[in-house]
Amino acid sequence: MITSHESLNNLKVSLFYLILTLYIFLLITLLMLFILFSGSILAVVISDPHAQGKTNRFVGICIERKGCGLRAEFTLRNVVDHQGVEIRYDLYDPTIQSIQILRLEKRLDDKLFYLRDALPEYSTFSFDMDPEILPEGTPVPVNPVQV
Image (tube, helix red, strand yellow):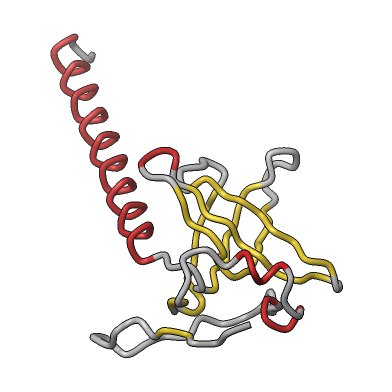
């Protein structure tokens, strides 16, 4: 039989692990915010709220990063079937299952809205693109392409 003292200890342990998990999640997302540059190619996997168990993956170039804390958000752009698609994500959206950096690079500008008027080849990326791994200790490459 479980006494009230044992159940209180179990509750304390459960609460400790919940707080620890949230703390680790916040540290990871803050780290992600600092290494997320405009011009990087990202893949975002979100769960579909209308279809239980289904996920959607979107690959695109980060054209904008704004906000801080719980209001942090970023915008990805890709050309799909000759149509420009932009999706804005909240960094702390609970439907986001993973954010993967496929190509880490900086651009000279912080906001890449000019890609909306550029040729589609500058913002077209394959949805099955594999991550490009940089050697450890190398600085983040700057993409000097001017459109």
